[in-house]
Image (cartoon, rainbow, N blue to C red; front, side, top):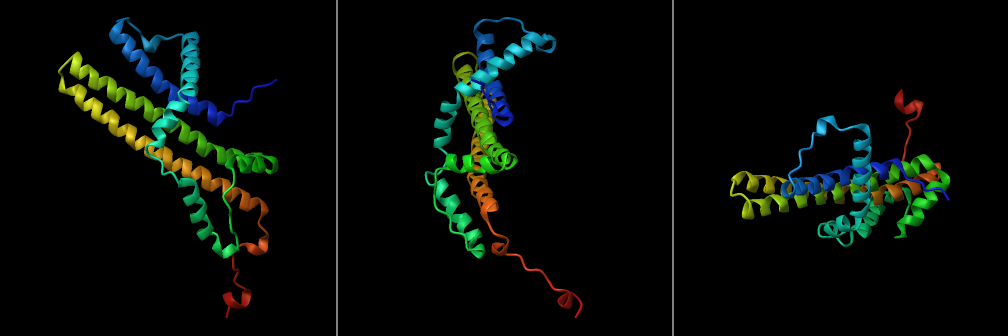
Length: 210
């Protein structure tokens, strides 16, 4: 049995997991001060850290989803389909809410390249969730460090900066997930629409040259 990992999914988990790994390494450095020269890491060490980051990003996906649910509207899927119906009203298209995974499978069956374009939005959303979670954890770590380890106001500033970045990134994750839902239906319409349904009017030669 072969295991297929999409390029977008791979980098989504790798980048998101890198931030989570950075949080863990920062905590370990505080608890067990070990000198680490990041600039002189060997290729093997980079590969090991990259693998750990990917696994962390993949494993933290459920945690990122929990954090994501605090920000995403409950009816985002329904609203996206409803807005798309309004935009496509001139084509005589009336979309019903369907299981998005089935629709993506339909797109893959007819056009793999189009399916990859659709899935990149979901991958970006996943990456932003994990990255946002990493900044949220950094915010908590800096807050704890200020309260129990040091009274430097710089830690308070860092905590608020990380919290702000976390909020901005999770809002972007919601936006890209909306793009994902929208692109699914747009791709399906593009695959099945007839030319005469397109709301395009061409000017005739007589109209151009009265």
